[in-house]
Amino acid sequence: MSAPTGVQPPTTTGALVEARRLIKHFPVRKGIMRRIQAYAQAVDGVDFDVLPGQTLGLVGESGSGKSTLGRCVLRLLKIDGGELRIAGRDVTTLSRSELRTVRRNAQMIFQDPYSSFDPRSTVGSSVMEPLRAHEHMSRREREDRAAELVTLVGLTRAHLARYPYQFSGGQLQRLAIARALAINPQLVVCDEPVSSLDVSTQAQVINLMSELQRELGVAYLFIAHDLSVVRHVSTTIAVMYLGRIVEQGPAEAVYSTPKHPYTEALLSAVPVPDPVVQRSRSRIVLTGDVPSPVDPPAGCRFHTRCPYVMDVCHTVDPEATVTPDGTTVHCHLHTTGPTLAGESVRSLRVPS
Image 1 (cartoon, rainbow, N blue to C red):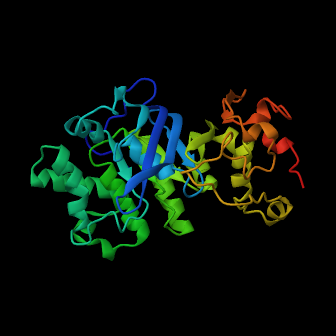
Image 2: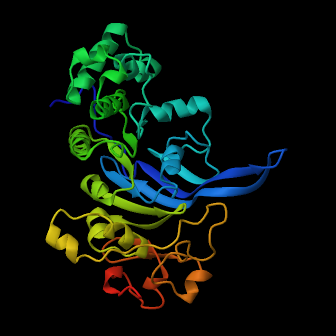
Image 3: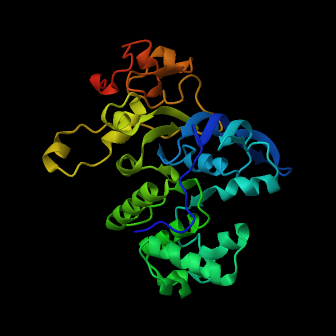
């Protein structure tokens, strides 16, 4: 498989995306006058980096703020606070016209491929839309580029004349990937790109994205709720809970030696293909629901569901602890109580 004409690996030094103390709150309006009564803290003080040509996997339960964070990175949502730099440029203060230049280097793949394509237009027209918006090309050049892109994702030029309803979910998601790569972006935000697909199709799409990353040097912010999928594609994993990142580090370190109780609980829910190993595992079932982002708990936000909760968790927000394997974790277990000091939370016994 050959790269499309003109594609060059990113030349940015350091982090491609830098987020510091990123905040996005949504107003909650009530009453006849629709006055603001409170704010839902969807993203509340988040730090992360995405390096060129690498993948940051962002995981968490529904409602944790993952998709909101992804939309903030592309400035599809207004950012309420903090700093966000893409290729060294602060995008929080840019005007609409200035954002156009930034968005040329940052594209998005949405969760549902059927809702992300215009059902009244051919897929070829949709794939060529970024070229019409950002490139000075003739119609013939756009058609040739679109044909090059669909070939890159395993389809043919003939598919461009078809409509979205004529494709399977996996084929249409391949076309969504082709559209995202049309203008050679350095970053692609992937908002649960395989969650609506069956397992075999998921594997095909994930393998395709990994192959394209190796060939084109594109970086991914990969948003998902399935840690087994994220492990397969990610260089770094960030675990998000109630608007905050509670653990972040190298993918293998997070997966094999989780430092935060929430990460441990998520991993315990991931099935293992070996029946003997699966039966011997102990499942950690979290009690209760995720608290409302309108009124998050004081102290550690996870303390209302944590099996290892201590008195300090109710009142003190845990500071970041950097462990020897490069993981950053926000949990009192590493500084007080058992004082894990960077060791895996799996070394503790869940209280009965």
